[in-house]
Structures are given as structure tokens and as C-alpha cells.
Amino acid sequence: MCAQTPEAVIPDLPLVASGKVRDVYDAGDGRLLLVASDRISAFDVVMDEPIADKGRVLTAMSAFWFAHLGDVVANHLISTDVADLPDGARLPGLAGRIMLCRAAEMLPVECIVRGYITGSAWKEYSAGGTMHAMAMPAGLLEASQLPEPVFTPSTKAEMGDHDENISFQRAADLVGAELAARLRDVAVELYRSGAQWAAERGIIIADTKFEFGLVDGELVLADEVLTPDSSRFWPADLWHPGATPPSFDKQPVRDYLDGLDWDKRPPAPPLPPSVVDATAARYRDAYERITGLALADWPGHSV
Image (cartoon, rainbow, N blue to C red; front, side, top):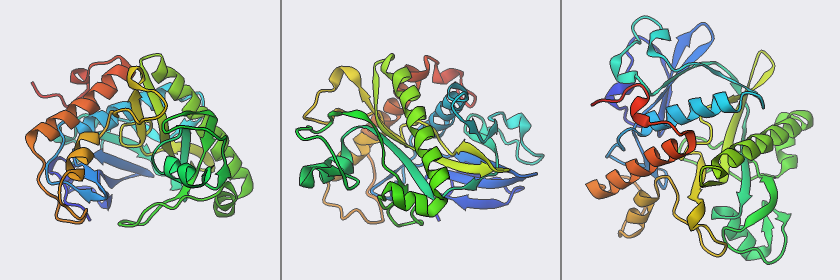
């Protein structure tokens, strides 16, 4: 279990889970409280240095997308206002980084949609012309836009393990054919809508991951949505097929760590202030460019 940041400690609520970034509490009455910390991980190792405002960015951006995409599918979000929390949980340090949500029966499939070929998908394609074992058009270059967005599901790994890419048939085996088809169709529609919005603001969403659950039998979008942690955001003016452009996420951290003689195992090497600051700036920039809003206006800002 990851160490908790001070703002994520809520003694009056039961802690349900603590991940690399979020802590989840039982808020009673069929509700969960998700608290986004400023922790950052790379290569599945949590760094010691927090990234200022990262938790607020993840929360603010998810809240924006939940509202913007509400016509595509329902979601689990109830409130981002600390005033709506149970007695004993209304802590000032939580402002701007909490989501009070309906507790959902989470589905065991990561719903990944790819609009561009990069990352592990590019590695597979380079080796054999396939993506998730599906034949793809010949002649694609790294970071090429795909003819159509592609649903490429994976399993949800246990803590410390890696997600496993799976076929659509395997996803259907896990959740049933009808629900798997619904997940695919909804995930692709969410991606299309979000990608179009972002493109109009100069950002390419190369790929993203959605998570879904069931609340009283209703399919709901859950967890985080189209954030720098769950998506690859590229500046459109720096994109061209053949090379992967810089991304609005923790790329400065990964680049720095790749330059060290480190075996990618704990303990994590210290991050210099310049890397921490550059990463924080990318998260803030992604939020403000996509939403058109100032992060300083989101709750929790300290002057």
C-alpha cells in the first residue's frame, strides 16, 4: 500500500483502498469518496516528491468530462464539494481533490480506445503488423492516426502486476457478449466526443482508458475520465507521423528516470525540482487548454 499524503487522511471514514494516486473511503449510504493525491508514479514505482496540484487537475478535469459527456452515458459522480461530505470528513485539505460517488460494481475490463498507434500498440505493430492480435493496415508509421478509433481492452491487474491486453472475445467471456458490445460502443463514442472537443483546442487525444461499473444494473462511467494519467495528450502543432510528440503528462519524469542507472525498482531516485516543476506545468496546461478554465479558480487553490 502506498504511503498516504496528509490531505488524504480521513480518520472518521473507513479506508477502502489506497492506490498509486487515489485513496478511496466508504462514505456511507452506498457512496464512495475518491481522494486524488499529488503522488506520481513511473514504471509502477511511486516517487517521493509530490507534483503540485496534480490531484486537483485530475479531479477538475474528470468533473469537466463527466459533465461534458453526460449525454453519452451516465456516471457515478455525485459531488466535488467538500460541504457535501459526511460529518468529520469536511477537511480543508480535501478541497478540489475529492469526488463523492455512487458505489459501483466495477467491471473487470479496462476499456482502452486508440485513435493513434503508439506505445505498446506500436511495438506490436512494428513486430508483426497487428494491434491486439488484430491485423492493421500496412504502412502505418509511429504515431499515425488510425482509420477509425479501435477498442483494445485489457484486464485489470492486481496491485504490482501489469494489465494484460485481451481480445474482444476474452472481454465478452469476462462480462458477457451483450455488455462487452455495450462497453465497446460507449467507449468509442466517449473517445470520439472527447477527441473532437480536444482537437478544437489544439490537443490530440492519442488514446485513453475508461472504466465502467454497474449501479442498480445501470452502466456508469467511473473513476477518472480523459485525464493526463489515463490518456495520451499531444500538442497538435507538434504531431506528425513517424515520431511520438511530447505529451501533457509525466513525460519529464519518465525521461529523467530513463537517463539514470536505475533498475526501475523501489526505492525511487529523487526527482530534481526542475523535473517536478516541468511535470506540474504540463498537468496544469492540459487542464486549462482543454477546459478553457483557470486551475486557480478550482477549489483548493492557495494564494
